Image (cartoon, rainbow, N blue to C red):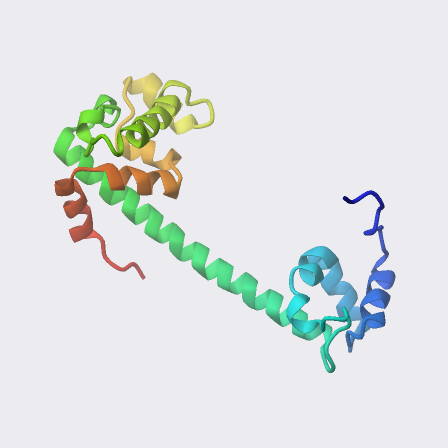
Length: 195
């Protein structure tokens, strides 16, 4: 149980002193202050110090702030590269799914809100109903999606390719997993590595 404030506010100078007291080398005082201003102690130090500390809580010999910053930078770069590529895959898969589904069933929103258009079985009945419930909620109350409101107001219908933009990758993955095999096959054949 935490009752005391064991993480009080510290000035940049005090933060550096705390790090120095625990054996962390700080080659450039000014650069260290700039790093703390730019990234914060919590984001930079708290998240990346563990590999550099001994069991006693003191930094391992010859460990400097630059070592922690290098790990932070590597992690940030890796996250950026992964996210950028996940977004490319997400856009591509959404496009293929909506195209293949609408090519088979048409663009009327009632098609993707109809359980018979999915690979409906007793084992996945509840999950498909949940998916249709999520899609129905967005279609019936699109207040968070101006493009869906526009589509509904102007055309009285939300085609799947419009709905797809509002769906998370997790929901799209479920959507795909419940599609009939012939539509899954169309998507799979068209899906290619994206550069």
